[in-house]
Image 1 (spheres, rainbow, N blue to C red):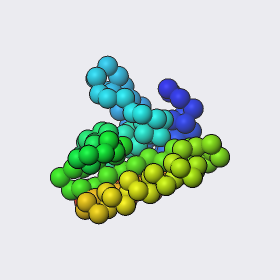
Image 2: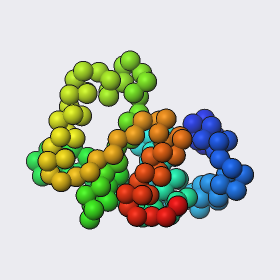
Image 3: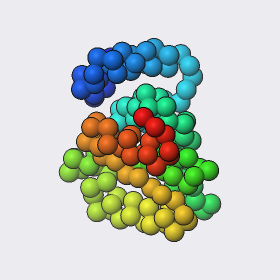
Length: 142
């Protein structure tokens, strides 16, 4: 496997799901699909494929004047996912006061614009809470 985080996630899967994951990884090689911005995003992309979730827009710029982006967005439904990496690090962007305040502003404006923004740290990606919730929100049966 490509990285340690992906290996750890794969070990938690049933043998059947692990085989599907490996097949998905093989299919993605050389496809020219956009690479995820982080290891957590890579896992989330693979989970979406495993669960049959429609492909979202990556790095969707949602505000007409600010350069704010969502990690994943289903624009027609105004549903967005933000993968919050680095929350366990005392130096992470999301845990520093300035970064936290900027994120709060971004999410408040997005909500005002009618977006439903789902924020997930690593633990909720790895235990599949995030992907199961998004499946329910999008009306996809896992």
